[in-house]
Length: 184
Image (cartoon, rainbow, N blue to C red; front, side):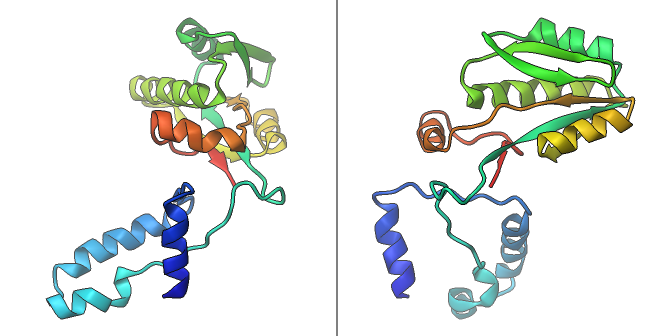
């Protein structure tokens, strides 16, 4: 209990964000929501399924890598995809898009956070209208380049790096980021 009390006091003055990359917290919540309907009021108070184990870390720790998660599009016609992506683009910051044949640059907003929102929104719409196209999320630009090199139907989108000091102000002003925005 002393740890929980200390954390509660800190949250009043410092932002606390929950990240759930492995979906374990989401799965635990679904199990709890289902299970609590079968429990008595007394059991609800301290049932083990009510709790989840978490790890608290500071994103300001210099030993913690804070990296973008890149996108790979499979089975899209490269010319069609690049053309649609370019037509929808706006802003002044170049975003690198790689195909097995060449590199392209698409203009995006100055804020990398806004770029992530825009790119994911574009991809969601593109996938909705191109049912045979799929997406994957990749950690590390060298892994992305390897996938593109060995898969002739792949298109890589090199997502911009994020500045950790700007994360909380952005979330405070704009709300949550899209899925797979960054990796810690």
